[in-house]
Amino acid sequence: MTSAFTARRRMILAGALSALMFSAAAPAFADDAKRPEPGVISVSGEGVSAVAPDMAVISLTVLRQAETAREALDANNEAMADVLAAMKAEGIAERDLQTGAFSVQPRWVYPKNDDSENREPRIVGYTVNNTLTVRIRDLSRLGDILDTSVSLGVNQGGNIVFTNDDQDKIREAARLDAVAQAKAKAEAMTGALGVSLGRITQISENSYSAPPAPMARAEMVMMAKSADSVPVASGENEYRVTVNVTWEIAQ
Image 1 (cartoon, rainbow, N blue to C red):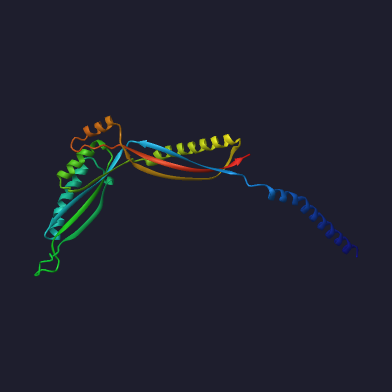
Image 2 (image 1 turned 90 degrees about the horizontal axis):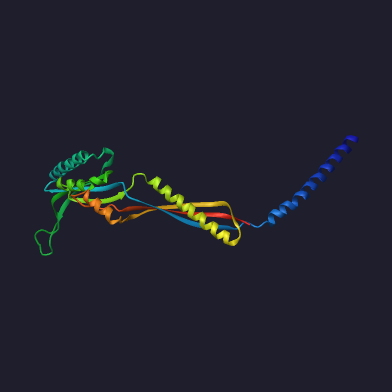
């Protein structure tokens, strides 16, 4: 009987203690529910790195035509072998030479409207195209390489893309400028409002490369003199990074 009574008293005390703890914590939960969400400020900044290119990528295409596919291919192979040998003689490494496209196409002749005898199209020969992509890391050799390739039989292509080998390092400088610009904007805005920046809640980035911009005239002339065969001007490459940052406002 005494044991049952003692157990009952313990249960009553435990229930009372639990209710007391809940009532003590309830105001804290209520205060949290009433606490407003902190305000935020979102700012973007753009960083730009403009540098002279240190590498060019060109495409050189050999096109040959003949009555048969075999003859066209043989002529193309001979010319392209000479181009490859010349590129290696210019100091172009194997890793900077890559076949970009290759095709064998028939040449069709379609009958005229007044041709009553031959109404069906017919093949009169074949065309073979072979395109070589070349990375040139010594820009002073670019003009001579273009001239040499044409002399050896390249008769299409020549598209030039000026670029930079270590783009990550260049973009990193633009990224740091973008972050500094975004922070300066945010501090100016919050300072004017009499508040301060809190913790960062979100950050994102977009980056892209702009087309080459013209260099100063003296630099362009120097580039032309260093490539007597085919004058070229490399200009500058622009790398832009936009950063979007969101801060909480500390009041």
